[in-house]
Amino acid sequence: MTVGSEKADFPVPSLATVQRSVKRDVLEGRVLEVASVGRGRVKAGRYDRVLAELKLERAGEGLAVVDTDPAAPPGPGSGKDATPPLRGGVRLFVPGARVVSTASVAAVVEVVGHMVAARGIGCVFGEPGVGKTVAVQQALHLLPDRVPVWWAVVGVKPGLPQMRASLLEALGLAAGSLAHRAQPADRVLGEALRRPGVLFLDDAQRLSPPLLDYLRLLWDEPGTAAALLLCGAGTERVIARAPALRSRVLTWNQVPGLGQKRLGETLALFHDVWEGVDPADVGWADATVARGNFRTWAKITSHVYALAKRGRDVGVDRALIEQACARLGPCP
Image 1 (tube, rainbow, N blue to C red):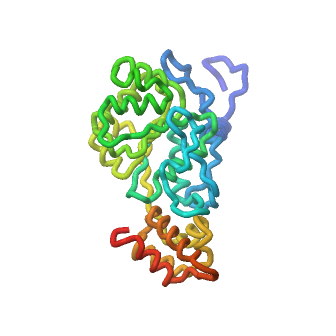
Image 2: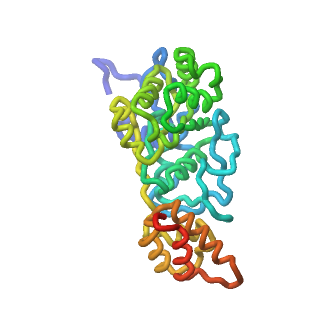
Image 3: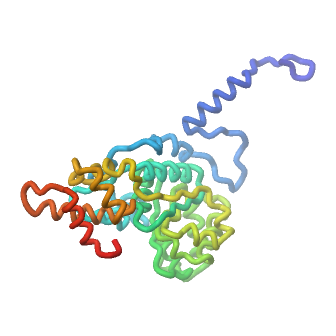
C-alpha cells in the first residue's frame, strides 16, 4: 500500500481482519476507542463490561429456577445491602415458592443489562400482576455487584418536593434538609447521578408529566452516567404524555402473561405442589380464572397448597383446583 508517492513503513491489516477484530471486541463487551473524550463528557471506564459480565441466557430458551430463597431488593440509599422480607413488595403467598426465570424474565434481564451498560432510560410495562417487578428485581439482582442500584419509592400523586425527597433518599442523601430547596437539591442530585449505576422507580404510572419532565432535565445534565428504569402498569401511557422524555427512552419492554405452552413446567418449578398435576387441569384453571396472570397463579397456588395439606394423600386434581379457584372470588 502506498501513501502519496511513498510506501508505508508499517504493515496494514486487511479489511476482513479489522472487521473480525471489531466483532470480537464487541462480543467481549469492550469499548472501541475512536476519539478522545472531551471535557465534561462521561468517560468510558470500569462499567464498559456490564453486558459481558451478565452472562445472559437466551431469552427464548426455558430457564431453570433462579432463587429458592429470593434475594432481597435494593433498599433506599443502600445499594443491594437492604434486606426486607419481600422481593420489592411482591408476595408469593405460599411457603416453599421459588422465583422462576421464564422467557419474559430473561428478556427483561437482557434489556436492563443493555440499558445499564448504555447509561440510558428504559421502561418496563405490562398488565397488573404479570410479574414486572419480579422480572426487574431479578435483572437488577444479576447485575455485577459493583453496579449500584438505587430504589426510589413513588408515592400516590406526589408533588415535586415529594419527588425530590424520594430521589434524595434513594441516593442516600440528606432528604430532610434539601427536599424543599430546589436549586441545592437539584445540584446535589445532578452530582450524585454522575456516578454510573441504575435508579429504579416502580409504579412510575403515578408520576405526572411535569415530574417526568423533571426526571428528563436531570438526565439531560452533562456528565450524567446513571441509567433510569421506570416500571409499572400503564407507565408507557403516562410517558407518552411527556414527549420530551418519551423521545429519550432507549428501551421499551412489555412483560406478557405466562404462556400456555410451558405453563405446567413453570408452575412445577414455582412450587412442588404442582408436580405431576394433569396439564389439562392446569389449562382449565388458566383459561377460566388465571389467564396467564402471575399474581393470580400465586394465589391459586397458596389455596391449592393449603387444601392439599389438610390430610394425608390429598391429591391435586380438578376438584381441588376448582375449590382453590372458588376462594378467589368473582374477580380474581
